[in-house]
Length: 173
Image 1 (cartoon, rainbow, N blue to C red):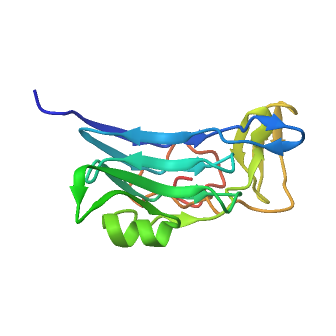
Image 2: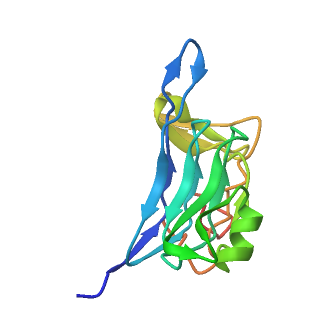
């Protein structure tokens, strides 16, 4: 049986680090794929721990685009791959930044690295902040923010935006 292809669209994948003596400690891998194919688009990835790895993958298993990646801890790793056997004596390779991942994987060409400015990530409100207004579960209504998230209107242009409330920029977030 051939490995399956899975599609992930419009999501937030984030880790919340454990703390020890006030310091964030490692939390692990956000997305791991060893076989098959995973297509990810219009999603936000937040490496919430200092030793997090956004992607731990086998070569050729991830295809992504129009994603936003945020690594608030500089020691976290963007992507890591393990080669079965070895490739020129190398068993594992790491890409510390989105740009190095894009060059190696030839994917994520429209993706970018930025703080997604989510309303209240720590308490589960994953709405993007917006000066034009966003829904707030805590207020049970719309509120205006002092800043606008870079993920506003950043989805793939062909993504259906018709269910987004006005004003919506005629493009999905």
